[in-house]
Length: 169
Picture 1 (cartoon, rainbow, N blue to C red):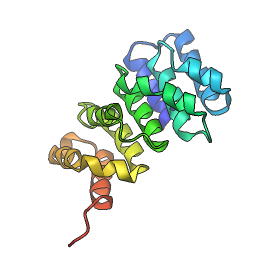
Picture 2 (spheres, one colour; picture 1 turned 60 degrees about the vertical axis):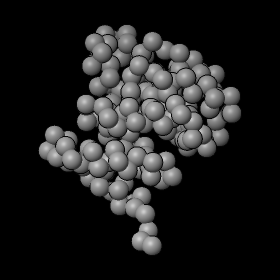
Picture 3 (cartoon, rainbow, N blue to C red; picture 1 turned 135 degrees about the vertical axis):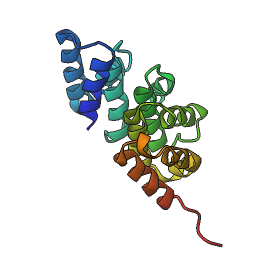
Picture 4 (cartoon, rainbow, N blue to C red; picture 1 turned 30 degrees about the vertical axis):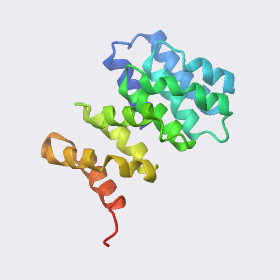
């Protein structure tokens, strides 16, 4: 799904030039098998889809160095909310979910008008149960929109509400 999102980002931003799409394809490969230094360079790309893959790789690759985890922090304030939420998920996965920028990035994505951005945030939160509980009101607000949100978004909101429900006292 992430590769499709990066293509969507490229197309949305008018980056459908062959050179730029080639950079996204290269970034996808570097994200999963490149060196840590190559990954750090991807974080500085002018293309949102490339920065997205860099942040996502920090989340999913095994044992990234601490300085690389810290290097992803500025991406939580990225102009593109999908990049910001991928960076926030990387930080949260590595024990930095309490940082204000992490929570702000998720909040911004969960309130975004485009369902795809919300879906990306919800998908990450599904893997981060402690952080997911913080956003229960956002799940309710999204569900209140009803048919304005795709069924996939509604299902994830319902699932996260159920998973994060407070036990009966």
